[in-house]
Image (cartoon, rainbow, N blue to C red; front, top):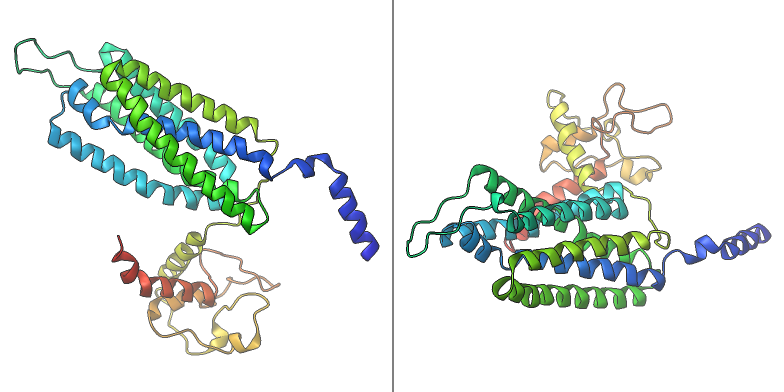
Amino acid sequence: MAAATSTELQLQSSDPASSRRGGWSTFPFIIGSLAGLTLAVSGWGTNLVVYLIEKFHVESIAATQIVNIVSGCTSLLPVIGAIIADSFGCFSVICISAFISLLGTILIALTSILKTLRPQLCESGSWFCSSPSKIQFAVLYSGVALGSIGLGGTRFTIAALGANQFDRVKEKEVFFNWFVVIMYASAVTGSTVIVYIEDNVSWTLAYGICVVANVISICIFLLGSRYYRLVNPRGSPFMSLARVVVAAIRKRNFKISSKAEDYYHGEDTPKEIVASTPIKSFEFLNRAALITEGDIRSDGSISKPWRLCSQQEVEDLKTLIRIFPILSSGI
């Protein structure tokens, strides 16, 4: 057995493909893509309120409200991106989101290039300014929405992918330190240099730089694909919580049992846990773990995941519900 193990280790170490995966060799690609994506988003996002007022003749209050909505979405979307990445993998989510971000940046840049995609200039010596058409607004808002979605799927998902490249805690700490430094340095550069170009040189040139930065970041990220250590997705924990809710609703007409053996406790569960009954708080959710006909296969595994959950999954959701008031107080 020991000989076989040592042989396997020798084969793994002699495999050049496995030795190249992960580690600091992936650092330039991950950080480079982060810098480009952050520069692009901060370039068009920081000065968006001015662009709306000057080029689209949006009133200052309305423009501020639009930017606030965009800011709120960019804060929420990374959570959704993380959930999707848990289910489908960080690499796939980053690739798709980066291209979505590029498409959004291109649409925003087109509104500054093509006169047909923005309203006419205000008449000289007059306060009258033509309002944007529905198509012009649609193109601009589509670009902003796609750019925000792309940001949500890349910024912190890249951090997770980067952390997966290292085994030692110390190496991960160093990586996250540089991740934060590069992210904020890129944001500051976009918020100063590109904004200066927008205000004093040309909106078209500034947005063109954002497009180029986005393209370069995608190229850098894809160039490092052969070196990345890709961890198989294990599924999002939020999916198990959703399964509890769905299973409880589907079994709403079943009577709750007081017997521990009527509930599913999972495979290879210790006997002392099997002997315990579900906690009575939020009793409605206990139906999700209630065993009914056809829920379990002959080997003891779940045959219908969206109809039966383990008792532990039910208790996890209950715990989350109990602490939600504390979590919400910090929002």
